[in-house]
Image (cartoon, rainbow, N blue to C red; front, side, top):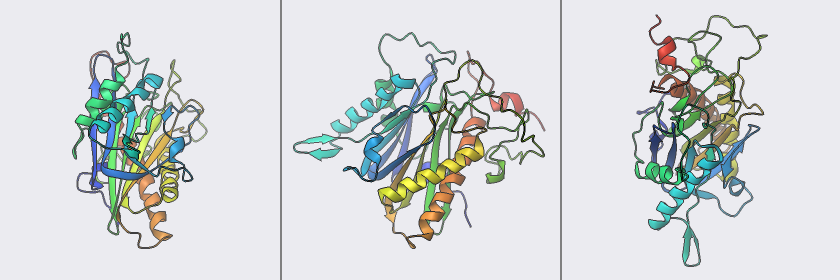
Length: 332
């Protein structure tokens, strides 16, 4: 039986911590996933407009197999600087890949576009290095969902997006997902409150509304108006002892969860990306069956995390779109 972990967030994977930093005036932020020690790291990109740092290094044939942290950030290309703030702070702690007498923290990152969301973007200096360092300092086992961190200024087609997370346990293994939802498409069916991810909901983690009773498969998807720059960026993690190639397969499988939760996903205007982290605490019981199940769990967690992020988004002054709660929360 697959069940949520005790917190139902990615830090149910022991040895991982998450921190946020948000800037309410700019309507943006950054989120950091930090390991107590370096973890096996991988990535898979399916969107047509990604913005990334250090992703080439995560291919299974490259020299470095582990990362110290992952960074998700708003800010489009400016937001890539959030990883620099994290790397500087980790270097000061003596963490990183050892090269001679130097340590080089390995901090892959990905960004979403939130530059046209009602916030004040007239900064004199790039704020994202500061936000990255603040998010790292905030890292802990418990963290908020919704309009925080990299999800602070996120928008989807018709609603505010947000930062979501979920976890699952099976057979002694734990898998979790962390996602900033800023998609071109919708996460709900038609004009109603029902999430596309509803068939995968555990308990009432995003309202318990259940699946939509009907939808028109021939309908043209209503997309984000005006601003066609988007992206859903995610991390899936497990305590299993995976190779980098196996972790890459888990990231690939997790994209199924994105496709189940966002309609449409992986478009030419989205930079949809999934990082994968494996802490290695639990040996694989079966070299074929166990990775298969971990990929299935990663997709399940990512679907739920996407819905939870939008469900938890909060209303703040200057919003250009309503939250799910404002539009649907009072409906029976």
